[in-house]
Image 1 (tube, rainbow, N blue to C red):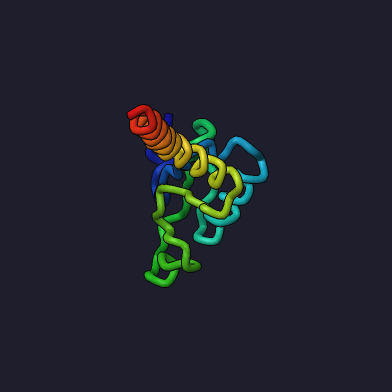
Image 2: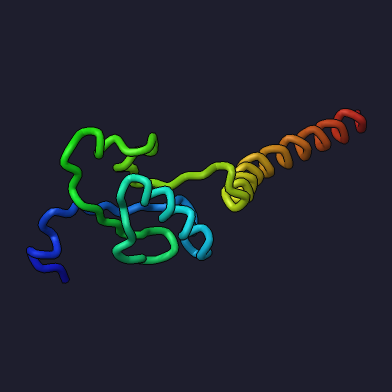
Length: 117
């Protein structure tokens, strides 16, 4: 639990990943390095999908703008990440695979029926 002194002068956010983004130390380190560019530091790790960050409240607009990364982003997505590629591939196969199978089965059945006629 936090007391009032812990909260004064700070702002907080929770950064989420779409899949276990923080399960590997190097992935967590990369995320924290990116967030550190805008002054965020790790407060606690909830699980492999969510971390809580804090930073001192910025005094100026320039401090709020930071480095080009959205300082208030709440989702971490790196689509070049090999793990994300594998996840996307499995999702596509899970959706497209049954459709292709059903079409091939239908064509085969129609060919057999029309060949028998």
